[in-house]
Structure formats: structure tokens, C-alpha cells
Image 1 (cartoon, rainbow, N blue to C red):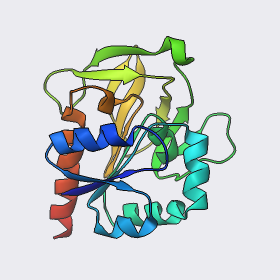
Image 2: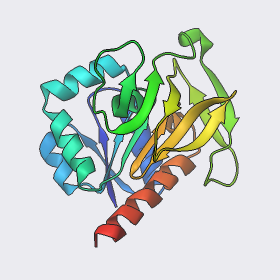
Image 3: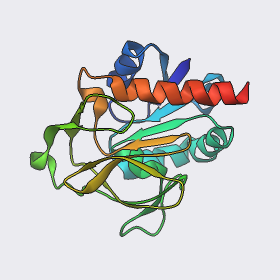
Image 4: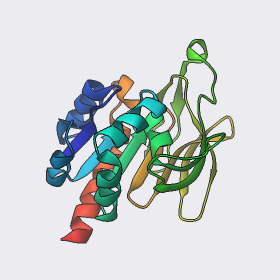
Length: 194
């Protein structure tokens, strides 16, 4: 399985390392044409407004929507979760508007309120290590979205079909099981298309 990591901003090398540890071939994606050769795509953390601007500038908006329409899985972490969301609190327009959820930016406060915790995730046996850095929150989900984990009663991991979203940074730990979970989604999607 060949998985891309959108390389406009954010923890690209860390995601590539985690994907490779989970058994994937991983590449940094800087050009729209690269999407054709991929089975799945990770949209990493960073700054969602900046990522959105760069995606518009380099033609990634429609290209990633088309990628998703072909049934190829997307995994958004932190700012990547915001980019996938249908609605962003306090913002007129969302970015890709692919996932049926409303999100709040920087819901966990500023940089100094960053923290790590062990998180139970549906579909993964033992708790995973999650790093929250100025993390967004999934305020609500619509039809078809499965909540995979909560922290203090707030939704922090969710899945809708071939879309996976996490408020935190799984790539900043040595625990690559959420990447392995995404890889399973990619394999399922590829098998469904075969």
C-alpha cells in the first residue's frame, strides 16, 4: 500500500516514519499529480488556515475531493481534522467539507496547555498514546460518523466510511497503531474496489 502525506506544512516526516513502521510505503506529496499513484492520504497537523490556503493555491482542494470520491481513504490529524470537516465553529467557510462533523479550532487552549494522555480508541485493543498540541475538538457529528474515542466527554477521534480524523498527533509518539488502523481502512477500500 502506498500512502501519501500532504507535505504543505506540518509533521510530514513523523507521519512517514509512523506509516512505514505500520508497514506502508509512504511518500511526501507536494504535487497534485502524485495523488494518482496513492492508495490513501494523510493530512497532517500544522495551521489549518495556512494548509487551506496552500491547498487552494496548489490545486489540492478539488483533487483531494476527487481522490475521496474514488473511495480512497483520508486521515486528518489535528489541523488535518479541521481541513476534513464539514463545518468549523466561527468560520463562514470550511475547507474540504468531506466529513459530517462540526469542529472547534484550538479548543484545548494555547501551546502551554498541550499534554499527552493514554486514549482508548474503538477498534484498537490497548489505549494509544496521544499528544494534544493546541488541539481542535469535534463538537458534534452527523449521520454516518462513528465516534472512536472521547477525552473528558469530548470527541477526539471519529470515522466516517473512508475518512478518519483525530484531534491529536499520533505521529509524535512511537505508537503507530492508529496509522496501522488507517492502513487497514486503506486495504479494505482497495479490496472493495478490486
